[in-house]
Amino acid sequence: MHILRFSDLCANGQARGQRVFIRADLNVPQDDAGRITEDTRIRASVPCIQMALDAGAAVMVTSHLGRPTEGEFKPSDSLAPVAARLSELLGREVPLIANWVDGVAVQPGQVVLLENCRVNMGEKKNNPELAKKMAQLCDIYVNDAFGTAHRAEGTTYGIAEYAKQACAGPLLAAEIDAITKALAAPKRPLVAIVAGSKVSTKLTILQSLAKNVDQLIVGGGIANTFMLAAGLPIGKSLAEPDLLDEAKAVIAAMAARGAEVPIPTDVVVAKTFAADAPATVKKASEVQEDDMILDIGPETAARLAAQLKQAGTIVWNGPVGVFEFDQFAGGTQAIARAIAESSAFSIAGGGDTLAAIAKYGIEKDVGYISTGGGAFLEVLEGKQLPAFEILQKRAAG
Image (spheres, rainbow, N blue to C red):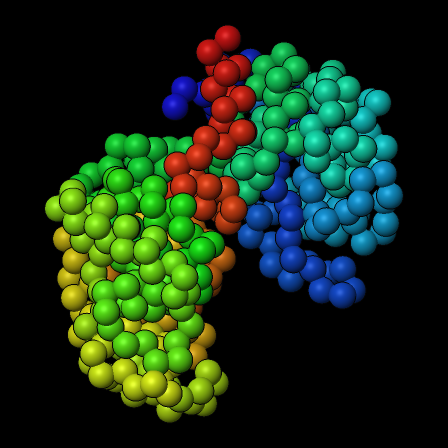
């Protein structure tokens, strides 16, 4: 994927004295009092901002926060808490600028934060007039927000069409590199783990991966539907019986290529879904009508772990059991440990996946942890992300 990289422009001195507009992803969770409860996204955006400052640019940064109504700014929509945290991280004051579309005063060596971009009329539908106005604010547009790369909005697509130069920031460039390494030119065998409560929400991902991967490990409610498709009993487990044909088609598509969807041979069941529900390990063929499958069994986990350790590339989206409850966490923990110990290049994404990675402390052992939920899933579906598309167009001239 050919795109311009902001790091190259800075290295070549092309950002000195230039007005740089950075679209970051600073959409962080807050409590009822507006205090930031988790600042990973803000910290992840600092290298790009610092790069621009070090290069002698006049720096503008913006992001969305929450789900504001266009044209109706409310105090709860404000990036003020983000500006305060960014000031701490950069060791300098970061002024917050409201009503910025018609002009921003910022000098080389300075950085300002532009108020919530989704409050601007026309942002979500990528209004061309808004995009042109924003493009006039800068000499270089930098997209460093992979979490919004699947949306064609004013600050993610439109401005990139009209700005003098449009490029990818270090965070977005790292995502592109990791995705290319994992999906476009993977070292084989390529193993994908796709788990979640419903086949329907991940069906297009499963169908897309079935054409490319060597093993497709399914987990959670998705695995229950695949077990049902394989003729196994699942008791009162979460599943989607109306999608059995689709599950069978994925199994058949994999088999036709000599690839596999490993079906669990043992499972961990309970009679109720509760934090204190007693867990019982059973053969997959012996699940009772009143059983609920809440994890893969130790035999299955060991088999999958062995396969992961032999992989060349691993793509991970979703825990394979209810790992929030310790008695149903064995499968996810075994998968996580196997990925950590594997020499394969691994890329992981999705909120629950990140929570599992944090729970088992394997952050440093995963090749790349993706910051974008929806964008990561759309990449797995084989879709072209709008932000990638426009940056490629601009790089091609």
